[in-house]
Image 1 (cartoon, rainbow, N blue to C red):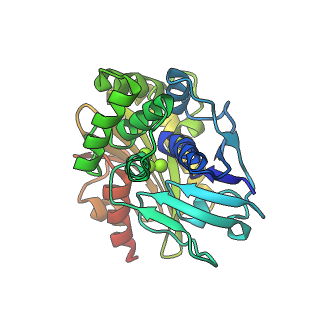
Image 2: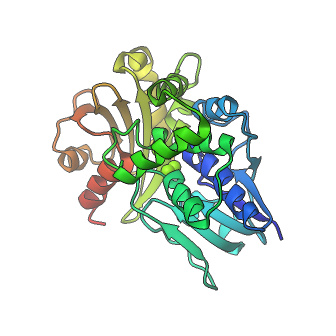
Image 3: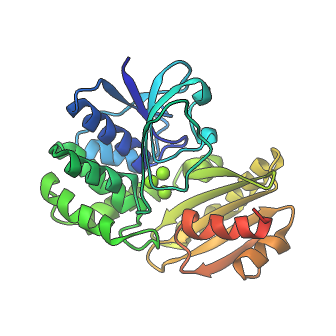
Length: 309
Ligand code: MG
Ligand code: MG
Ligand code: MG
């Protein structure tokens, strides 16, 4: 059976590109594999669209149901972030860089998770270990995924291994200026004109279970905060609507990639607890947190601690 390689829901560039990368690696190793994503191309986030176009990569196939399929997961191992019926699929491999999720399997599988900044960095290592050359286009995509996940090396999740991988991949892909590539991606991902507020909130959004409380955290990476000044009210309104749908809290990280900090917008049943979690004071439902860049390394751990997870 063909292995469907798929990243998390609300796919970001890493989960789209790493699906392409792992499918390419498995195929080169003589397995039948197909890159998939939990989105159709029209709804895919604008940054990933730019990356696919720029490097001439074919968009992964849409996958919404995993029942009965052979699947390989990239960039997640939480059932909640997978396609429907993932628990009834045959998971054959996981390649990730997050904390290990709640997936379980009946037989031993290839499980490769490393504490690096991007799944594509793990894949780069796997290609090298296998002695398989990364196709030029795929290398370009992987390079872009690492720049995206590490916010051009500024995120605290970025490691030396990520930087080395970028150095290797840019040579294969023939990319000279990675800063220029990152700025093109940032321009695409931070474009807000004409986009409904709820779509912006969900552009890079994850729900978490915090001791039985559903907590949503979205992030918009911006070149400057004033990009969202005019739509701020609408964003807060969209957050309130999403929170009303059974959530304890909804947080939106408006991350200023240049200033290297986040304006954290909070709609919560317990704002005082969120303030305490981040050592700040909410004004108009928001607080500036210097140095906050990463949902995974900064926002979520502080929340988990506050909720007593
Ligand atoms: Mg991801
Ligand atoms: Mg990732
Ligand atoms: Mg991300």
